Image: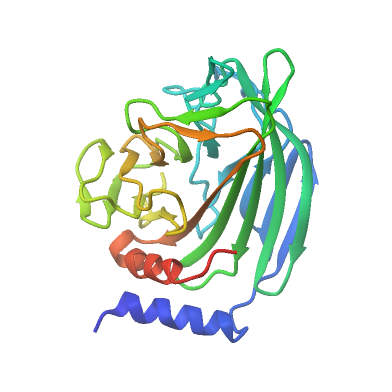
Length: 312
């Protein structure tokens, strides 16, 4: 008997029947939108300009999730880490963006910055909480050249964890083409910077457990998982990142997988994706924040269920 599959199927049945329920609340203050479930923290969306904390370097940033919490309320993500100060929780970014033959970098925030613009729809039900946030990509000269609309839907938790859907739409506001491109094949797209102080890291893809760093998976993997132990030594918890089959070039074969704490679905790799003036790009992902390692949480089966869903 494949127990993870049955757990996954049971969770879907309970959710559809309204048996899995949540008590979500939003709290907005100090440039942060906090989401809790029955008082327990789920995530924080930083819409204000967040400055480096004392003792850490880096430039102010906005429009990203941090912290993202594990099922026991322990932070999974990091911000302003000493090894890569530009890394920031759960964020959408590319290191090579070309506008009017000028190359800028929203990954390191060089020549261009993501700036929070406005809130969209926000909703709480018995089984989910959703919110929308728009950011502008603003050049150093003050010109907004793109808008990224980020839509998040957080689902009620089950015994194994909870899922969060992310739908990102990037629209070209410039009067000329915008080119998105990764660097060294493995950077750019949807990214998660994890807490590097958590021990016993296990990185898993659809092909099995990986050793060391990975920039590309062959054959391509539609998902990857990063699990580790909290600092207090309790059992593993982690997060899986799923690519939806509706995404361009699915499954993108390039991943940024780092034992020190990085999980990124890198697209379009070292190829160019050109957005014509007025054109937009849709990218859909799911996070599965879970107890145990990937095999224990039934991550592969969770992905299969996600892949069967029609995009919203």
